[in-house]
Image (cartoon, rainbow, N blue to C red; front, side, top):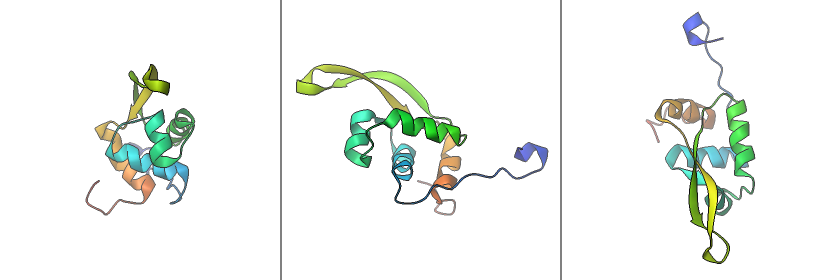
Length: 102
């Protein structure tokens, strides 16, 4: 059901303190690849976390990037970010609706 059908859209709120909450909180503020997610959110499987967020109806953009990997060797990873039209929904999922934006 959508708001265009006259019925409110229910957004699932994520539980604070969870890995998924931490990942979405980071994505609301910056782009993120797997090594950053591991360091900043202790998420070892960012692609799975992004998939879960998409299961909740959030659209997450992605692109291949090359970053330094083991011993500085180039490594291809996906970089994820939220498009501007998904930020309000992300704030709702984080329970930040009334904070004036992130």
